[in-house]
Image (cartoon, rainbow, N blue to C red; front, side, top):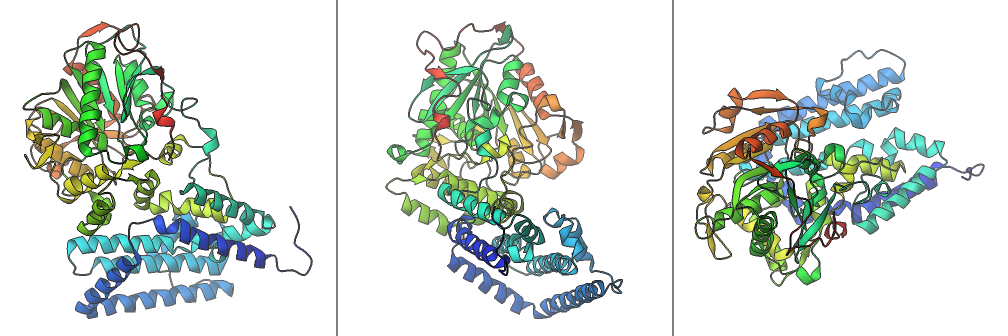
Length: 585
């Protein structure tokens, strides 16, 4: 590392480099954080101005209080700078900055100016959210405006800019600018990848230290590979268990490492486990449809699992979009050609799309129509685009910390298998994706009897009489738990509903061996989600235990474990996890 030359200003080249890095990020990556276009920003501000004009006295009251609080902060800063005790208490809203992890480093408190910046930012953020949240607007527009404002507030944090982040400046000085040089290198590397690095990707390799449960690929077609896993118990349940992961992610979220693998847990509980590994779509498959995913994917996987296991029926589990595909397939075939599924497990799955949570801010009629036009003749939806959209829902957890640490501080993120998986996206075929957006998200037709025709079959979820175990996660920002609860009103068979703590992934992948968190169960179904929750019982530990008990109750019979994978017709093709899952976007 070269020391700065005598007489030069070391900060000038450093700040110049970071300015270029920020500009490159804004142009190349920042623009992908949301689906909103510049003209939509103008529309948001226009709607905001109109709403303010309709209730000007209320706005003026909020503005007056805001100025008073900012004045108090300013006076406090001047008192501290003069070595005096502040005479005016800090506004209550500003004190939240003291516990915000973005400003937890001591550098933010040691200097009165930076202390003022963080508190002023939090005060402004609270004021803007309160002002926008109190406007009298159409609920749909209000939700979009709230989301846009939050994105703006998160992006404008002083921690995201080098000149207003004392941690960045301190490290740049201590390293003679090396931290900024490495940060720019990290940014250029991520620009080439088209995504933000959230973990040390060199620490992981699929099939080597993640997705390592022993098994083999026993069937494949253009859409998926079917994996079968080696049993670890002398006896197994008389029915095999087929797992259907979401097609927008790699399957190994269910098989990260032995300690937190749902696949291994099920195998160790005495199940013959089969699992679908979806194809990472490329140009030759750009015209694949939703019907293809149902027929060539789900239906084929169910019948192949049944044939290999040599059983009359199977148990099936669907996770997220995998659960929607599985339910759609079962409902489509329920009348004319019932699928041989004895029990159905759904993990964080939406079937009623009335309330889809914040992801709905991206999906309106104009957005869907543009997608339909774009993919009318085929096309591929990049997995990176989908991942960025989901990350933007939690920007302060999944975007900005990595911008600051990777690009401004020049650090390498620590190795974390879950975040490695999160960055390993899967492409989707454009026609399938556009159909999914219109018919499920926009028009909410999956839950409406006979509103959908899939592969020549009318879809009515009420025709599903299979016993079902429905799991939701209380803090899920992708599948709101109250929306997942609506599934209990759609099926006709017996249902057990279980609500787990935490979010979409951490709530779902909650290993029984660690005995962490809790779940709620036991309440009477039939009413609203709130009514169910009011009388539900909290149980410590992982919901996996309750699910395993439920499966055993549904199928107590045991048979000798198979001694080989596949059968006379379907021979092992390659070892698990197979080559489909290793194809990267």
